[in-house]
Length: 594
Image (cartoon, rainbow, N blue to C red; front, side, top):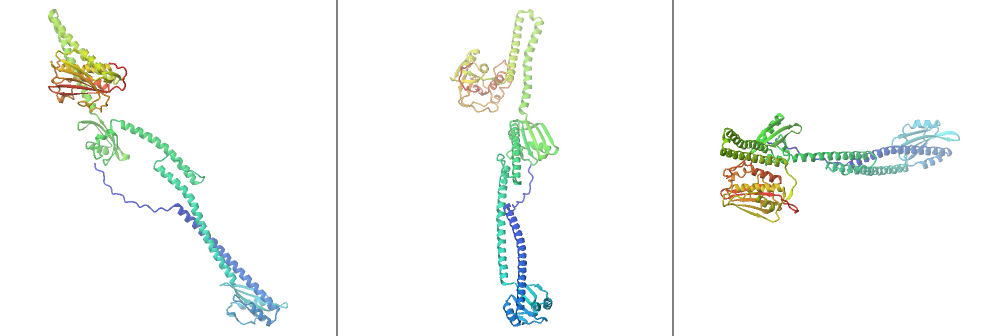
């Protein structure tokens, strides 16, 4: 299964980041500018209005003062008074009782004809009224009556502009207002940046703490100072951190427990995507994953079937020399398939071995039972009356009964070893056990026995089992050694590895392990039979043994494995065989038993 091709996503350009400090600074600056401009406009308008009112008041006052002075003097003196009162921003014209002008119409470049509605103003003044008229360009026209001896003797018309002093003062005030506006804006921007910095520093701390949360650093408390909204946010984030830490602790514990369970399983567990990639697998699944990281080809049809139908199963999937039971189920939420594979090879081998064991045991029991039945029938037929025949058949009955007894004892021993399993180990003196095993057997005629046991060879195990193993190996060697041959029992501590590894490969041999070898100069065992001689009821084709059940070496192997050791053989046809046993060496040296 080939993963589907996907068009690579276009790279996303990161947007330029604008800090909150800048945004808040600009906001405060905007507020300062709007506020300053509003104040500036209000103050400027009121100042100009006040200056204009003040200018009108000054003009009215000067006009009234001029009218009073004209009423005190005669016409000749009036000319000098008018001349003294005139200036660039203040000109005056005098009128008699009939409304005729008594002064030159043009005064300091200002023509009386340019004053609009002058007649209306003069008539109002001659009636005793006062006219004050403001015109554009800061021009004020005032007309007042002139009283002499309590009667209206004429009128005065003045035209005035804003005095230079007032204009200068207004300009100075305008400049001061602009300066104040600039200072206010600067202060607003500075305060905005300070306040923004205070906010952003706290926000940056929260952002850094949130980054630590994203990295999985849940043991560092978050800063949660202050009673404002940022403090509330910090406390909420810290509560979330504590809850996440507890949740992750529980999830981590569950994950470790699940991982330990999956790693301890002998079944292979895999999660395979529908594109063929292995997302998860436990160590037991390693033989089912190819060098490319995908499941082996034999699993492909079952994965596709599970993806299409939702599930698939098989009890006899053969891969090479192994047989597997398979269960596959679709994981729709993950777009994948869960695969559980169990190796049934050893299970099937045990089933076959058990069937063969029962068949062989029945066969071995059938022969002596048939002999006993036949002998009994012969005796009943009249052979019991013949002393010689009776003695002959009684010997045969005894042999068959002994054969059944020995077979039953061997089967019970084998079953008992498998049922009991490993027991508490003792320190066994291999030298003592070897001597007792040799003494327990009758050495065949013209067969020499040699002992070569290294001093200090102590093993951990059961003394009775060790003696029984040695007796079994010596018995096997005696039966397969011709006269003039030699049987040698050797034992050593550490040294080189065994001559041949046991089935399954074995484990590395520590220096303290004890190696026992029983060698003979018998017929030897063909290489193709080395892996079978430890099977139950198996007897080699070239064996000199005429009696026996093929259980001795199988029982010896079970005894060795119960004590945590290994057993193997090395042989050459025509030259003899060497059976070796490795047992764990004793860690201490108390008083040994055997």
